[in-house]
Length: 261
Ligand SMILES: [Zn+2]
Ligand SMILES: [Zn+2]
Image 1 (cartoon, rainbow, N blue to C red):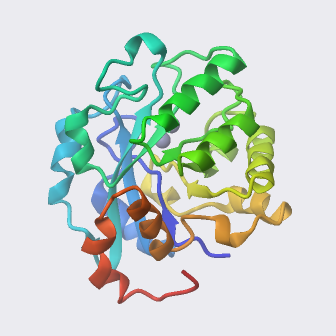
Image 2 (image 1 turned 60 degrees about the vertical axis):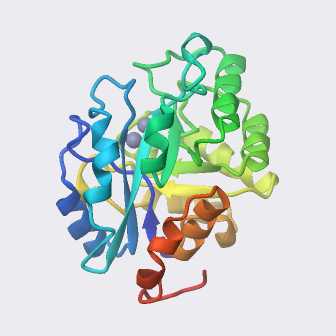
Image 3 (image 1 turned 30 degrees about the horizontal axis):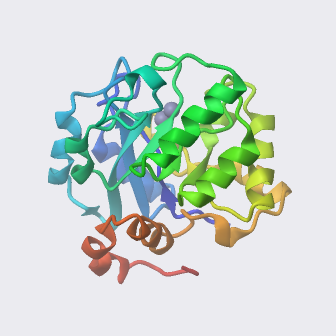
């Protein structure tokens, strides 16, 4: 099973990452992807880029050397007191939204310290209810236990993907494996969908999902419920959210090798 999209990676715009957009185009191709996304950290993270980073992503070519790039962000799930009228429990100001092809929302310790299972679950569901995010990033983080049935039900209600993050099995969030595995099982139980993200902080890792795919294989996860398996499928999902990048990329999409959409 070849996954042709990687929907989570960080560039040097987040200073604890080490590669440029150019590096990512090169290594996305080397690693067999057709499409990748840069998703640097939203403003509440200590090493987030200036908000202008996101507004100016429009100057990055959509396609370089046959590889397409989407303009994303990894937003932070916020606690109650920070959720003003324009924040919606994620740190995505209204003015930023038109520049983004999509948004991931994740728990990060420097922004929102872990709460009780009930609090974490509520915060994650409120982020999904915001209507401005399309993926929940690394939902199997053991530091933020959630009620996985409630999360998957809400994700399905709001058409939000649950990410299986390969970095959770390798470099980050130690102890994630059992939580990620049970998240995959819960998604299967509710017949819902996932995305796959490398969460690369250096371009060599883009499109590498070996550990995540091993879990999906072991559980016999249905291939058609991997929303990021092909560009056509992921772009169609974004269109359901009113994101029209599929139209911009239509000429390119007609040129790429189509496996099952
Ligand atoms: Zn993250
Ligand atoms: Zn990340």
